[in-house]
Each structure stands twice: as structure tokens, then as C-alpha cells.
Length: 308
Image (cartoon, rainbow, N blue to C red; front, side):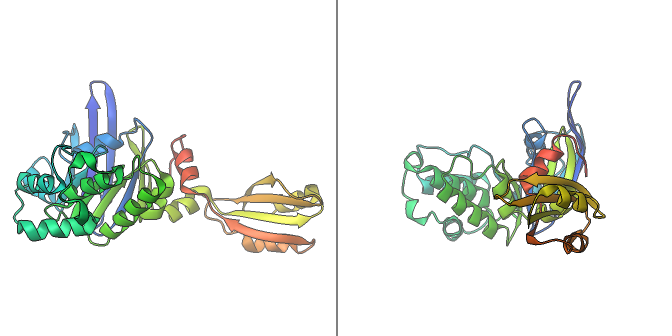
């Protein structure tokens, strides 16, 4: 549905994007992550037709954004980080304005009712936008992106500045939107991305440094982690566990008096549960827990120089 192919963007001698490529399948919610200055906003601006690339292409449903801008934009809804709202308008007036601006061909009354129902803003349609809460303004921003029934959505920080309850509501809304269309979801809230997205693309210094499901990236980069809690001192237990095949590192954790706790980091992709259990059979242990790296840890490791 959305294809980014070999994008390069240069500003004089500075390269903002260095051969960026990825695809987003129909019905997929993609989390697009990157630290400040990584090239994330530049990529989104090229995809939405607000900026030209030095080379490479960006296409929506087979239509290249610069060669066929009208056809491409008919299939794309865009919510920038600051929603393009006019506070002196009512919600109804604003959505009618967007409908006309997009030259929408759907029956106006029925379509705008459908959009308002989708984002749950039916009750505020007569109200001035300046009098809406931050949460309703974000919902209205998503509503304008839905006008025309686009097949793909680009949402840039849709939950920015919201309180926890409003963030959860927007998160649920994005999940529901992803059931019927392709969504590219940009956010600095990594827990939010992990909860909403099917797949994650991480960009850093103008290059894609990771592409995959959050669970897959955790397995490939974070490795399997086992936490062992046992009676006694840690020295003898640590010596045994360091000899387990596939163990990359052993770390001492805080523990109660008379106990010890260790965390084992496995080599990438290695399952060390069986070997660890065998090593523990010689002495009493109280607990064995398997964990994985979270998205925040993966993001920090990637943007500090690792490539996978």
C-alpha cells in the first residue's frame, strides 16, 4: 500500500536521508520511530507531498506522490503533530471546509456523520473549536484526515499532550482505524507504539536501522533473559551459570537476605532454558523467570550505534 524506495534528501552538504526504503502492507499499523534529527519528519513530509526528495520515490497505492499527487493524496489522510484547525469555526463548519477542500465525491451529510461517529465527536459538532478540550481537538484532527475515506493514514504524534485517559482513548481509536486501512504511526511514546503497532521501523542518522515486529526485534537484539533466584551466596551459582552454553553475560540482581538473584543474557536468538535448568539441578533454586528486552531498550541500543 505505501512504498518508500531508496529515498535520499540532501540540504547542501548535509544528508538528511540516506537511501531509506521500507514498505507498509494494507491493513498494517506501522510505528515509525527515531530520535530528534534522525530524518523521521523529512520522510513523512516527502510521503505526504510537502517536500521533494533529492532522489528515490514515495508511493501510495501505486501512485507516486510527485508524479501523481492528486491520485496519491486522495488515498492518504494526514494528521501533522499540530492539527491544522481553525479555532473560530465550529466542528461542523470545519469538517465541511475540509470536505470541500479535498473535493470529496462522497455524499456530504452521510459521510461527515460517518467520520464523526468513527472518532466519537457527534456531540460537539455545533461547538466552536476554540472551546474544545485537547482530547477533542486531537479527535477532530484525526477526523479531518479521515475525510474522503483514504486507504492510508499518516498520524504524527496523535496523542501528544494528552492526559493518560485521553491517550488511552486515542490509542484504542488508532487500533480500530488499523483494522480497515494502513496506518503509519509516529510517536515518541514507546509504550504507546508497542501497544498499538504491528511492526516498527527505526530510523537514525537518515538510515533505517531496524524493521520488524516489536517481539521480533526484542528476540534479535535484546536476546533471551533468564532471572534466577536461589538460596545461598551468588559466587558458586554464578560460576555454574557462566559455564552454560549460549550465555553471553551474567548480572547480579538485588535479593533478600540469605538468597541470591542473577540475570542471564543469552546470545542472540539462543534458547538457554533447558541448559540453565540442568545447571540448577545440583542446588536449590526458588524461581526461574524468562523475560525479554522492551521497546525502549531496543530503541536506545539501536540509536547508540547497533545495526540489525
